[in-house]
Length: 140
Image (cartoon, rainbow, N blue to C red):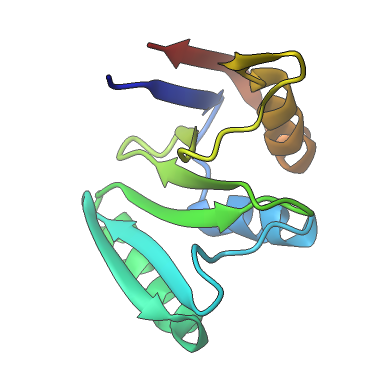
């Protein structure tokens, strides 16, 4: 059975993906998927590089982003063993946080993803950006 969990932010104007990634990093998010690997996406093509090649991944993402393509990277949320993909869409005014399968769930209701927890973590880094819409969904 498929499950789609997402938190989407839409901005009043274009937002550069590096601004959001820098904000997340300052809040303790790590740009990695495994202890020694980066998973990142350019134009919906996922790639894996050693952790030491983060600068190369960012350059590759920049090239694709400047060409009008979607880009993304897998992140580890602060203080947790919880991961999520951060996707920057082609129109440059929206970003999605896609929690990965090790979802954080609501205490005493493990069948529900704790969307509020993810939303709080994501908005804390982006709260002073010109957000015009937020949406959180858990579709089963």
